[in-house]
Length: 72
Image (cartoon, rainbow, N blue to C red; front, side, top):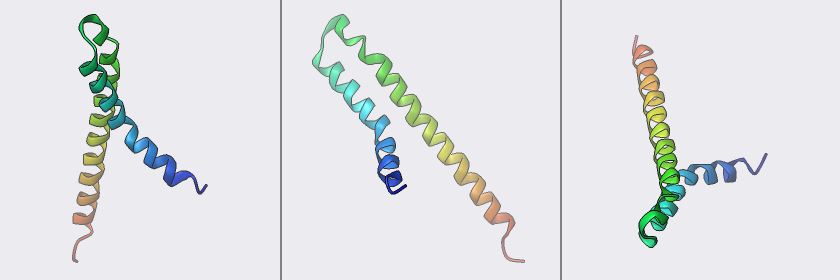
């Protein structure tokens, strides 16, 4: 179980790296050769957006729970 922090770190970097790689491919290629990079770009941005929305929801719920358990 000592590999878990390393695994989480790699998974956290996977969507930004996917976006970066697809942008590099888009910059290097011309014409219709750029099309295969678009699904990777869309998937990477979708994963990053989903992660951001989940983080915001968890943070909002945590702040609401802390507000309910405030000073009594």
